[in-house]
Length: 199
Image (tube, rainbow, N blue to C red; front, side):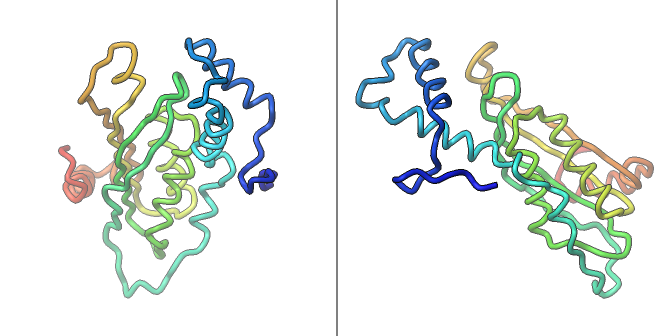
């Protein structure tokens, strides 16, 4: 269901949501009524509606249309270096990274943009990187029924760089291998080499 639209043509923000942001601004030590912050609560609310747009999306729907006329192609399909943004569920801080998604088709393929759409559908939710990696791989495995799926994600986490331990320049890498990429060492090395990731 679409969000209601306010008189200014933007998404209408419920008063209690705007007030929650005002409360956070006050608690942080600033005045939500000063000029620079007066419109911030509604801006923040609309931004979070966009950040979390994945809750309105079923990533599996992007894999419904497949193509069987592939000229006998039966090798790895890889979409590499897909940029994404998410937010960690523990501090709601940004997660910014890149993903590599590969699968070994059985008898059909999917449009390559659909792999990115699956990633974004899960990334635009409150997340942990480990679950994001698993959700993307599982969705492709369950819906395309390929011989194998490989997903590798590398990302930086503001919850680590901007607060707490405050350590910058650190990235986290997660992977999920399924089917032949998990069971066959040669296939796993091949897909990781195509991704440019060390085994």
